[in-house]
Length: 123
Image (cartoon, rainbow, N blue to C red; front, side, top):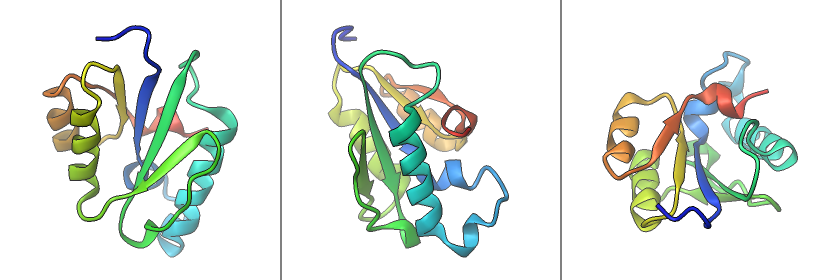
């Protein structure tokens, strides 16, 4: 892996917001925006240094806009497939995927990414 490149952190928005039963299902887009704003303000706790955060949204959360510090990508289809494609495109760059989805974890680790659970991206 390339140690000089900023860590690419890909956040599974649906999985992270769905990890806490706080009423997110009533406003999926709003929940994704709150997560985006938290990530933009706080970064990823425990991950100092250059980090590029990509928040992948799907379904009702599509259309959430990027803000400084967090690039938002609306998956055209499956969010999982989009995250796998982002990992594949990263090449030798270090990648961390934030999700609890076991199948997604399997797919991205097979491509060389590290994974961590949703608590990493929640306060």
